[in-house]
Image (cartoon, rainbow, N blue to C red; front, side, top):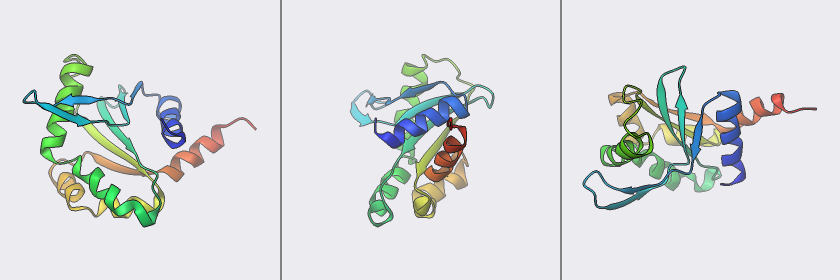
Length: 149
């Protein structure tokens, strides 16, 4: 886990008060064949009754376009089905089945629009509307105000 992921982890657990499982691994598709994905966090929002699959990307603007496309592709149905099946059936052992799954991406503020404009992200939002892009700078500012002086 890198420094920015640690900050997001702290933010999710201390500020938002979510139980968080870091670095989850998906190793099989819904068909049982080898397949891999590694979301940065699985967070449980009991107050909001939702499950969050969280990704953190800190690439600067010059190199972000390819990563933005990769993040947006995680919202395609095959990828979502494989990840969500693993989360619901294996990690959560078929508990919380009534909690919807939401996707949250933490990226640098300069990269928010680049991700929100990707076709896969736009299509997913039109169909489901349960994804959000959060600027890392927001996390930094909230944590800065909470740190002891």
